[in-house]
Length: 428
Image 1 (cartoon, rainbow, N blue to C red):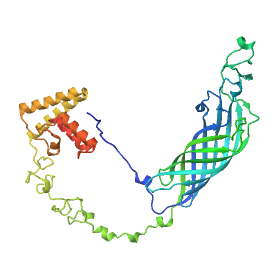
Image 2 (image 1 turned 90 degrees about the horizontal axis):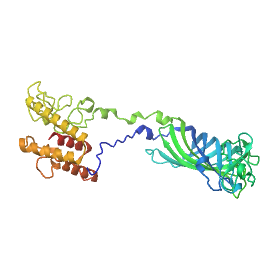
Image 3 (image 1 turned 30 degrees about the horizontal axis):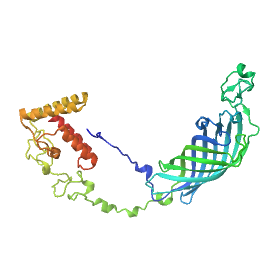
Image 4 (image 1 turned 30 degrees about the vertical axis):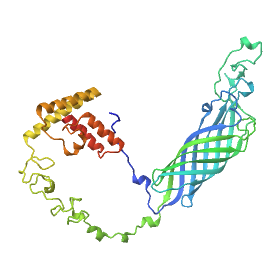
């Protein structure tokens, strides 16, 4: 086959997760909690062989927000805690610095929400604020207690200073990444301006999921203990969940029941069969079809098939009938059993060896059966359009043609009808 067969493509849209009543509830307070990663941008990290991913640290956030202006705006207070870190390695001895700092930040934010059609649960947002951060920076400059690292110009780290006499006797060491030494020159606190944005997804009237990032512009150049040309900055990328405390409006609590005309509803007869919908046991009856007192199509011979589609009237009581109301004989049952058995054998044979050769073998077998036994049954009307050469047989190439038309959008075949056609192919 030229294209894979798609058996099903399920789409489930849960209305109560994205739909809201026209009467908006009153927003009281939103509580959010989340986690993410912090990345630092300062003076450390300007040397060579820097891997920023090695210095990503975790962070956590908690916030309280009050929405206003019909939920277009929000004012919040928040707490963020985590760590900042950066390091660098270079053959230049002065560019082998590292630091790690704990950070606890308190701030206020103003957020703007780009509200959209209420059936779309995604809401972009942007925010700006002001915050105060408490810091405690340390560096990793020792190993095994008080042993110092010494960075040599050949790029190595050794246990002795770079002197000619130490060339042979010095020993190579590796960093232990334990930040044990406080950086006295590093800032102990700073003010920042957080600027951010993200996407909020409404999971329900009260629950929201958020993904976003905030870039923090600090007013100091000393978070990493080094001075440079610009102020230090850091990025917080996060995921959080929000719970909204709301109060239902009085209008939505007290529905205007007078606007509902129950007397009219009681008289409805949508299928026009003369039986009111409230009493109709068979809604959707085709027009002009005669019905009984319960609104169900007449079935004179009581075979379970309504008269208007029954192709065999007066069926003997208790007889087994097919979908057309025709009596099913023992010979018909035996014939169907043979076809089902043959279909199962052919399908299993193909599944055991799925290849073009197997399909050609099946085509040959079906044609041979028609030649020796004759065409015992015509192609069902719903599949006749697939018989392109009109030889009374559905071949594997004709099924491929149907599939190609289906994927090209030029076919009235549905997935269910294609599956039924494939079943018929094995039954021939």
